[in-house]
Structures are given as C-alpha cells and as structure tokens.
Image (spheres, rainbow, N blue to C red):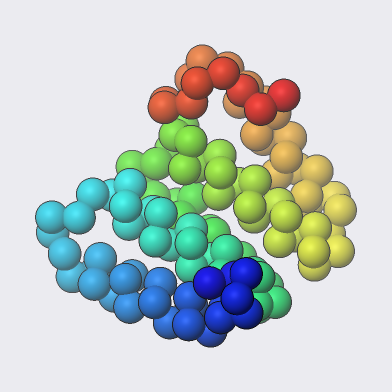
Length: 114
C-alpha cells in the first residue's frame, strides 16, 4: 500500500480489521497488536503524528505483548515517528528502552539487531 501511494486505502483496511478484531473472541492478542501496529505505521506514513502516537501507546499498553518482539518493534516504530516530529530527546529515551532490553528476555527474538 505504501509504495503505490495508497496510504488512505491501507488506513481504511487496518481500521476495518481493528473493528473486526475488537468484536472477535477468537483472534489472538498478537494479531490484534499487529493490526494496531500496522495502523499506527500507516498513520505515521501519512503524517498523522498525533493519531499514530496514540495507536502506538495502545499497542504498548497491551499486557499480552509485554517483553515480546511486537513490543520492541512498536517502540522502535514509535521512536521513528517521534523523531519525524522533531523530538530528539524522546527518541533517545525510546531507543534507550530498546537497548536496555537487549537480553534473552525478549520472547520470540532470535539474536539481536546490533
């Protein structure tokens, strides 16, 4: 979606998926987090900083992803959006949290990105 300039279409699709996920009892919490993360990334790509940061915060608040790769990926993507918004200090804090976690505690992460 992003490459073809169809960001509005992506946002609409992720909003519809989010609405569906909220009414589904069978959908995994990981998939729900992924939908929110993709929506946040789409909003960020569009330039809607406030809405994307709110969505990143919603993902980070999900108990089910604490300490998982989805959690750290969300922090990383949030840091990019904060940087795009010009807040270098907040970006450093977010990236610092990721670096501080560089251990075996992140579930589902093989190796590291350093």
